[in-house]
Length: 148
Image (cartoon, rainbow, N blue to C red):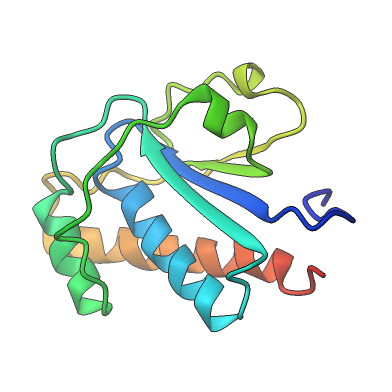
């Protein structure tokens, strides 16, 4: 993978979806944890956002992330710009994206994770989505674990 460079620039990863109120927030929380666990705070920059952000993070997402040790109750969904996405090395979309891969350019590794939307789902279904996201984020960080 071509996400490592010889420069001192950090690797930029974005997690995005339409509302930025569920899957991308879960992904961001797990990514922040992995970045800290692996001591990569100075090597990896994490962005999150949506194309049409909701007013708040979904309640069921707040509840299942609290079970995993995260407090998302104070997070506010935000819009992410095409300019921000173009500055990233990797953009993970959640399966609901309106992102046209060609819009960000060929230098960005866009990955569609194809995850189900947790909005309005029962807690067991949201837990399954949460656990799948955790696995995907850990695997993504495994790709960077040997980054200089």
